Amino acid sequence: MTGAPNPGLSVIVPCRNERPAIERFIAGVLAQEEVSGGIEVLVADGRSDDGTREILEELTQRESRLVLIDNPRRTASPGLNLAIRQARAAVIARMDVHTEYAPDYLRSCLEALERSGAQNVGGPALTRAEGYFQRANAAAYGSAFAVGGARFHAAGFEGLVDTVPYGCWRKTTLEDLGYFDEALDRNQDDELNLRLIRRGGSIWQTPGIRSWYRPRGTALGLFRQYLQYGYWKVYVIRKHRTPASWRHLVPVAAVVTGLVLLVAGFVVPAAVVALAACTLAWLGLSLIAAAVTCRKLGQWDLLPVLPFVFAIYHVAYGLGFLWALLDQGFRRGAPRASLSDLTR
View 1 (cartoon, rainbow, N blue to C red):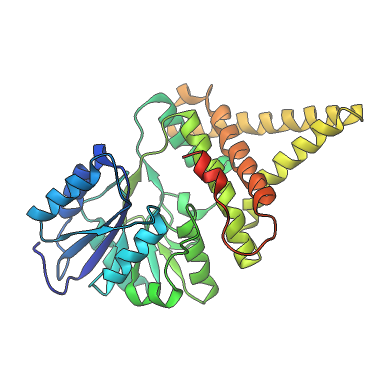
View 2 (cartoon, helix red, strand yellow):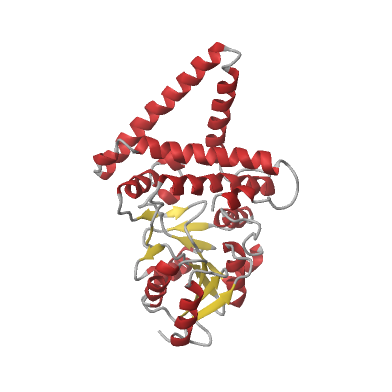
């Protein structure tokens, strides 16, 4: 593939401080199977200060298909929007640095977009993991008990979904939607897809579009990630006046119930009994879900740690959601992002 004045596909990539991974990622994207008209790769770098920018500048000197865009706002949504506006192709695919892609990923996206008639297409949320905790996190990521019953976690599902990882759209679709919401540090994909569906559009998932996400490899990293997911979800709900799915409210309901029973226990002894009963019920369900997950994957060594990982998913998301309710309240405008800033 060579640089072309009118490429068949524009790949947009948000990026900041990715020195260990960026060169390998770019090489993988440029080695994708041929698509009609060729590709261009627009990397929106958020003022990296770890050497990533210098690597990208050197790569652009050698590779005509690579375009470096300065993103002074630093976060993903503004970078994505800058790349969309500069994209020359009629079709745009998003890719992220910390994900591995099948060699036919881009070609499969184009085929699915044409075949399905949907406005956005993508593949299921697959994972690759190495260390013990990362493997446990990957197992939890595929469990309905940890993340709800979203269809994009089902590896073999093909059909209409609420959202997909990354995405591939016609540029006119993104322009009509008004681009990504730049107030969001997290959940920008889900929010864009919610707007798309509410305007009568559709999102199609096919197992033929294959990519593998590498989940967080530490408990602290996972906790911070889901703390932010919960925090930013409140902004999305407040903006649209309803949750995209009621399952998004379950973790915060559980956390609030636990906190209320804990405080009430200082006055009403029965509240302590209720809290203990709820905790035991959750633990029982968690052990059952862990056993089901281990049996499905054939990885019984993960059984001791999976309930702990489930707890991180639920508690971190619920606490982030509750923090946002206290921080954002019902005021208008963008969130202050104080929690996100504190936990990067």
